[in-house]
Image 1: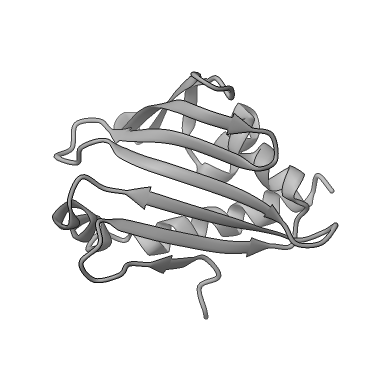
Image 2: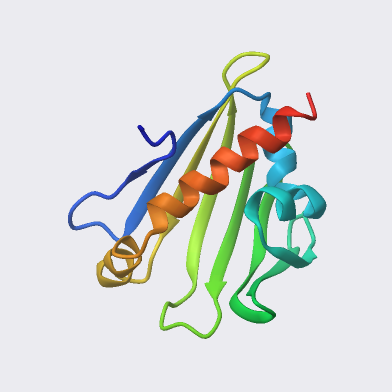
Length: 154
């Protein structure tokens, strides 16, 4: 089965570009990234804080069998409704330094949209380390859930 979320990594670059087309209006895809209750559903993580605004911040954590296995946080630097979110992303308790993420939401038609994420890493080595993990599989699974869950809101 072809993965709908595409992860592109150019040689010699310390960034990733991730693209996904959704059969959802851009407003609903943006909402999925900016509203805590909806984000929790498709991402499968607990939102501890989500201030969806310029200079806002966020914190997430994922648990398994009662133990916290993943924590992330960041600051939202740019927040333009239904268009873009620029934020930092820090995975706690890992060797990964803070990443910079640019999320762009594009209206294709009244019922379709495209998400483009550019993630900038401190080094090519950190980017490549992430790519050795099941990152592409995980983001595809999450975006598939986003499509499924948010479709019920149409």
